[in-house]
Length: 241
Image (cartoon, rainbow, N blue to C red):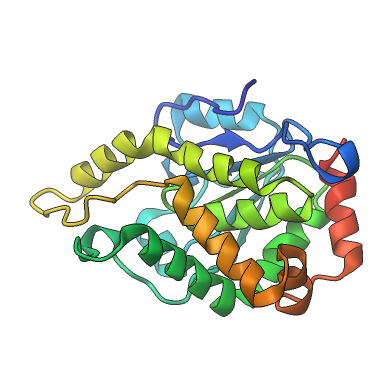
């Protein structure tokens, strides 16, 4: 199974294909990818990226992050979108080590699900309308990216266990994400020991809260995000086999 795709500078680029989905179907391979920041693409990594045939990039970061860190390289074949789904910035490196870390992260995800309804609707619309391989990303490919991946997979009919398992695969990138943070922040102390972590419990807490508030993930998408049945049908038609 080719879920992780190796790059020299990207730490968390993955294919979302292969999961069992709606009515015995499965998510297509090589159609939907998730990643950490594509601003790091250059040289051989850029060649590897283009070889995937990706036609659409969705950048989930704040505009000020893009201004500071850059964006994916431009290419005539690739359409780039920026939908900043998070509205309340916070510095994970400075999270109080005394708080329950996984509850804290799940609560931040809940804020995104609440505040970012317009942007999340736009993200899902672009994914549904796409005609070729697509990738979405944030900075580490963990939190905002993990939330979007969970929503898409849920609407495709993927089980909660598989959604949680996919989220937790970021744990394989944690050491490299921490090393990158230290290299980019010389002299700063990494106060929060949970930095770069993505344990299954975080996603389970978030999904439980969303289900409790709305009845189901699909109900959240339709009632809160305004996603209609046609968009869900388009998602399934495009991404399932």
